[in-house]
Length: 252
Image 1 (tube, rainbow, N blue to C red):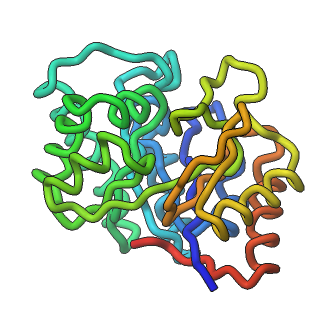
Image 2 (cartoon, rainbow, N blue to C red):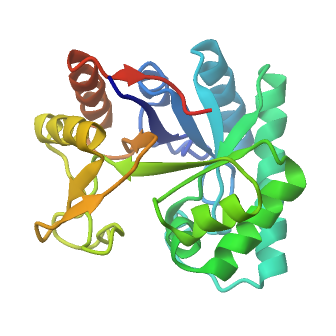
């Protein structure tokens, strides 16, 4: 039977503002994409989530982003390649400090929001991001869309790569995600998402919003932590996968 990793975006609170239930999600997922302070995540939040992840044997990943606290990292920022490399390097060092103090390390990188989409589509952005990862720690893996510029750049640099699919997001015909502002972009029905997740893992395909079957050779499955009812959705996905005998393990 196949196996899959479950990843989720965590540590996205800031100060008194909280988003999602990190503690509950860490009971379900096997990899945590932890914010690094540029789109969300204050130092105390990062430290707390790293400690909790280590205690629950969840792998720590750096969810790097554009410097965009006000826009939650969902706005594209035009940065020179060297400037972007340095911004990513800064974030890796910040999160890795808390991971090391917690007794672990950052084992992979997954960009957030606008940086994720830009790096998956544009080789120049992907190369700037991958340069930071290679310079900091060549053992770190890179998580992204299958066939994307990000994974191609990482492969060319000799980094381990992992393709992911999104259980709770709609797809365009070209394999990209339907933008969040469009109708039906974010799925919220736990049972439907769970059934879709099983189908994705078992067939390595996903059906686009228009009905086209797309190949998604995934090693990891993302369940977002900020969707309404996220914990219930993630638990439904995990239960459905386990009911089918699918192994659930971190990809690193």
